[in-house]
Image (cartoon, rainbow, N blue to C red):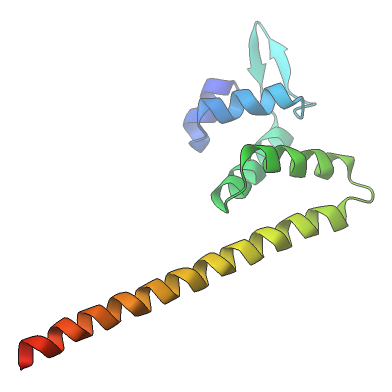
Length: 117
């Protein structure tokens, strides 16, 4: 599958595919007649990259995570720490947003109460 086909079929932006290639993480990707060809392993990795992106990893974090994944031995702990840190950050953000929502609801309640007077 070419880069264009992968982009269209899996809705992966071309810049992400090109960056993936530039990281040198696509060992099985071969150039055939000037076009990169992706195999199933590459598509699985790209799926993981999109998941990491969707949960808030920036490009540097994604590249680090993927390099650790490819090293395999002895990297589970590092990858778990990265995931745990991202989870803590997301929970902090959720709690902050819950406080914002509560304050917003307080203001709404105050206005509704004033309208009834």
